[in-house]
Image (cartoon, rainbow, N blue to C red; front, side, top):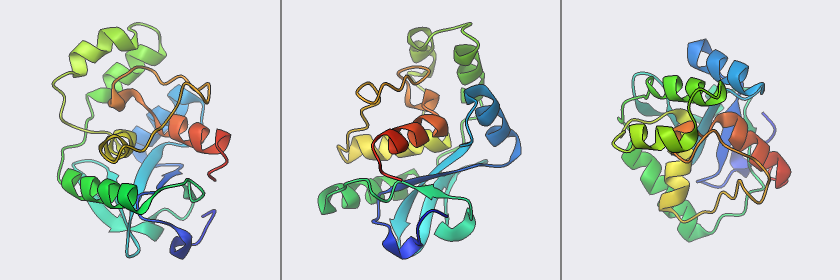
Length: 173
């Protein structure tokens, strides 16, 4: 871990190497170390999307976590992000998103083409939970300014690698 849990502000996100098939697909497709993402919700707990559904877990479950602990977040944003994270608990994991993610990475379909496919998708992958929480809390994740290009506009096509790159470029880690 790059920082002790007690230094985190609720609402800050972290990434880890990830495990299993999902993490392997993400790491291979993005050529990144990061294969999983999660959000700190306070009291030593995090919310993460894993199969079969988003759940709450101890924040120290990922001993290789890289936390965006320097990310500026107001008390209002923190409260809103945490509230949204709790609201996502129980949401089914989005294994079909990996098909879209793979199509995008292989340049067989672009983000605009996939946006229509995902328009009614209410499932979530791990990094999509972070983007969802931050959108709800009006916390900007400016990938364009950081010169980071996610695979598409749909939040299920933003990867843990994108989040790690954003945190690194902005000096949040």
